[in-house]
Length: 251
Image (cartoon, rainbow, N blue to C red; front, top):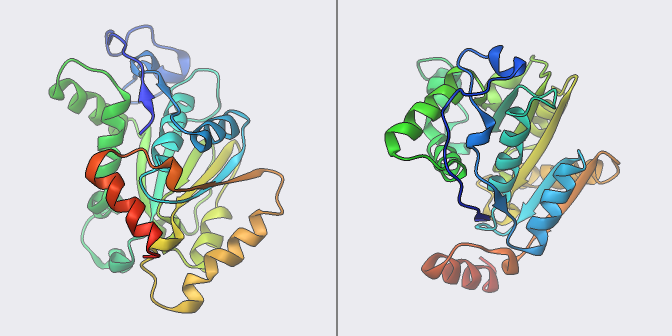
């Protein structure tokens, strides 16, 4: 995980901008802590993001791909100087593709996979207590700064003024990837994060779909593709040791 600089939390909601006042529960972007990249490819990811590129970040697990993208997206969405108002985190769990049959709206159904992202966001803010963070995170959700979608709910929509993060994209077939990218509207951009070695897809034609998708976006000037390797793993101790040996043995 990238290194963050220590900062002192100020009053939530202080010094509100016009953009923030339009939200249901305004939030001051100054509460975000400063985070620096730790590896060469994290630096590339930061730089490409700052250049305004759409991104396809792929490779080894534990390299901070999703964390870096989500952090930069939050910085932009909470800034007065950008057109982006929302972050949509989109993913599909293969085992829950039939999520549409479960009770509740898309937010209720997507709660199955929201916890890791909440933990990431907690690391991005320096607050005095867990209760302060719970209030802040609740505000982010209520003002719809961060929303969670499954692929079942994105069809037929057009996404404007937003940053879309498609995580675990190795679990999406070509049709799903195609459906998501064609939803991008005005003042919007899209970030894909994934690790092909961890795909939960079982059919070979579905597993190969992401390769066809990558061949298309490789031809697009608006995209940067960044591959992460073992040298980029930033988790410590047992987890890093396990991931390194897992990859070395071809699993």
